[in-house]
Each structure stands twice: as C-alpha cells, then as structure tokens.
Image (cartoon, rainbow, N blue to C red):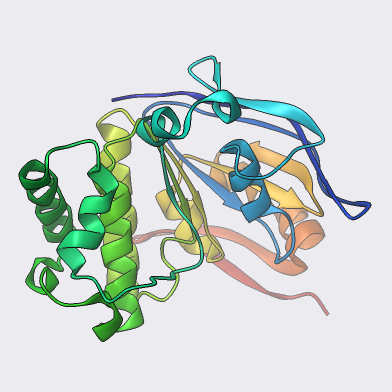
Length: 252
C-alpha cells in the first residue's frame, strides 16, 4: 500500500503561544522523511496535527488528497500508522498481542501471524509470549515498533523510533522502516541523532521555533549555516565509509 501526505500551512496555537507557524511539507510514497530540530521546535506537534490528533488554527493535512482529520477513526487507522514518542503500555499483555493490535482489521489468527512476522523482523520473536511490562525499555520499544509495522498502512509515522535502543537496534529499526518505504509506503520519523538522520532519511525537514527552516536532502538540510543557526553547532557533515557523519562541536 502506498500513500502521499501533503501538509499545507499548519498553524497550531496553544494558550496564545504559536507552536507551529504555517508549516508545509510533503512525504511521498517510497521515501523516508526525517523531521529534526531542537527540543521544543514543534516536531511532535507537527506529527499529531498532521494526523488530526491535535487541533489546528489553520492549514490542513491530506493523504492522497483526502483530509486526514475528516476520516473516520477506522479509515484513518487503515491509511496511517502512528508510533508515539511515549512508550506507555497500560497492561502487561504478551508482545504478540500488543503487536497484533496494529492489524485489528484482520481475523485473530491472521493478525497474530502478521504480528509474529513483524516481531521477527525486529529480532524479538523470542519474546512473543512475554508480558511487555516484564521487558527492558529497549525490548518494549521494538515490540511497539512491530505494532506500527503490522498496520501495513501506506503512511507510517514514527516519533523517535530509535529512542531507548542500543546502536545496533537503532540501525535495525530504521532499516525496517526503510524496507517499508521501498515497498511503497511514505515514512516519516523524528530523530535527535543528526548522523542517524542523515544516513537513514532521503530528505530532512528542519524545524526551528515552530517554523520550517529547510526541507531538503541531508547535505543541504544540515549545512554549516543551518547547523549553526538552528542547532548552535560549529561543524559539518563529512562523508565516511559508514556514511555521512556529523563532525561538530558546540559554538563557543
């Protein structure tokens, strides 16, 4: 399943303070779009507003031309999968049952089969029957990412999917999201690790104080000027055998 997300002029105001100011972007089928920026830049607000989970003062998000906020919850769930930044789980359910929540549109046996496959993709199939509250934070994060993959949605949005994971698991998680993009999905991720973002994403949307500063390939989006202006860093992306790497330090 493939999709195209178009966000036009999103503005979010909370208690008189502008959180997002006329933000526009697109995420195309087949690409991984990274949303980056300092803490408080508006990254999570952008994702939630685009999905219709946050009230907007202006603007609209559309998936394949349809306003997301106007879709019924079931239709929205089929169109877009969302992994929130908070890794909250209320009950100590087995991992297989948590992952299967991503494909609630399927019969129980088929949903469990899909869920088991997604757990295997993230190398936690051996935890399928273990309660998620009995796991480490990193293990639980992989289970919740498996739930996102199980949606089979054309638009996958993951807020900090690498948070709490060790380096190997970070690469694994982003590789699996890349595979979904190669299969035709539009994938949006927020990341704080700029090196990881440069390696994992086709384009980077740089937010600063609720405004879009750039939306371009990593080398352009993380130019020396933007690193200094947005992140307060002195340095640049350099090419290495492992891929682009941020070589930077705090500005004096």
